[in-house]
Image (tube, rainbow, N blue to C red; front, side):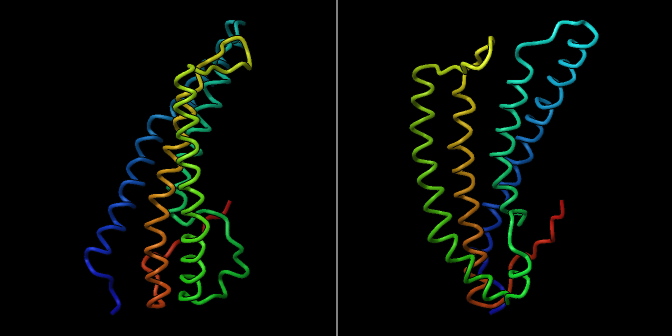
Length: 184
């Protein structure tokens, strides 16, 4: 058996599709929020001689949200850090076994706990209308706190897809998805 069943493949493709679409939508929303406040801040500071009190916070929060939400997309693309000098020498079956154990016993339980505990923090932050105390602007923090359980849940979901891919590699010795190398 060299190909998984259509249902098995459909689950993986559905999860990967959700990750891809959420990543795309959030990048269309957050990249302008990263860019425009900085442009306005530079213009305001150096041309108008009137710096803003909000641009740094908006940029920091947008970057944090983008980083957290993009982590599930990076997981799907195989862009997280690995020790290549060891990993490249393993067979596809060994990689599948290692990844299956890592996803099953480390990654998924951790994402479940982080999703659960950060959800409580988000609800509490919303109930008290938590605000930042760093600076004069004092923006609300609960939207950023809401990104944490959302991104952890996306990571958990993508972890299921990666676990299924790893199970397949462990069982058959063939990879369902071959990732390219990301060089920085």
